[in-house]
Length: 263
Image 1 (cartoon, rainbow, N blue to C red):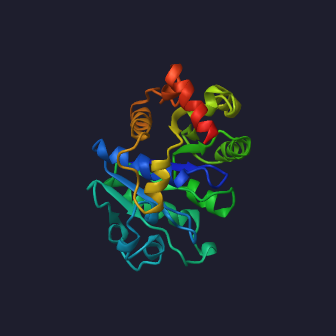
Image 2: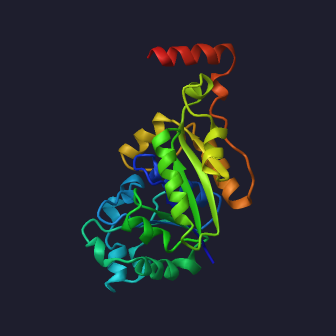
């Protein structure tokens, strides 16, 4: 039976889809069978982030309408054979797809995968409830900004309405230089304010943005270690958190922080 994990945020623009893509890729590299399910109906972009948009023939709405079998709609990753994407529809009427429909599709995939990662739409409207309905675990993605944390708190409260067995927190786009200088909210304060176990911290990394902008998850950048630790924490229950400040410590780190600030 697969672990069904929904990645949600409340606020848009926190990098939730990017986290979903890279988390899935790293879990697959560890040998697990992984499928990424995009349920952002009408505003889908997970296939673009994964660089497989030109390979899409069927999507999740085609499965729901009986036009194809679930496995026919899966798109296999070009580099990792155990990683698949189930694309969302860009045109199918949102009001016609219910949480029960998504759950039926995910149940069809259950026996074929170790992890099913569900990429949830931003906000807390119908799309959120449709995505969460199928999951039994949730990862809330935030950035170290007050607006993101406030929205995440609302999401955490709404998750209580569903059969979510565990909830965890990922802090994305953390800048170590600003964290050391006190210009960003402290990690401990974020965790304390949300009352969620911390699963991982992902540093701000230009290489992630550039890889996603041209299609394809990151393959060899500074954040690779952070995602590896995140995967280990999710699978093994360990608590190893990436230190975003390591390269800004000491004399050279101090100089680097000040140079970056001037630039």
